[in-house]
Image (cartoon, rainbow, N blue to C red):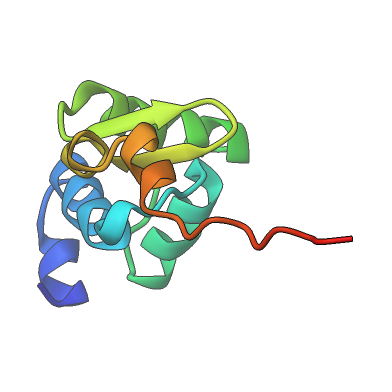
Amino acid sequence: MNPHALQQMNFKDSVIAASKRMLTGGRWMQTRQIIEELQKQGIQVPGDTDTAKVLRVSGVLHKSEEFIGERGKGWSLRQQQIDHPKSEAKSVRAPLASVTA
C-alpha cells in the first residue's frame, strides 16, 4: 500500500496498516519509533505533546487484537509472536562455542 493511500484512510486504519508493515518478521518497535515512521509516511498523529501522540498510537495498537505490547520491548504483531515464541527461538540458536583450557 502506498503512503498516499494511507493518508486517505481514517487515523486508526492508517496506524494499523502502516504498523503491520513495520512489524513484519517478528520485529519489535517502541511507540515513538512507530510515530516517527508514521510521520515519514505522511500520517499526522494528533496530539499537542509527544506524550499525547504516544498515548494516541498506543491506544490504537492496544485495542487491535493484531498487536501485542510488552513494556520495554514495544509492539509486535501478535500472530508472529505466537508462531515463534521465545522458547522456540532459543532452541534454534546455534550453541555457543565452548572454551577449552
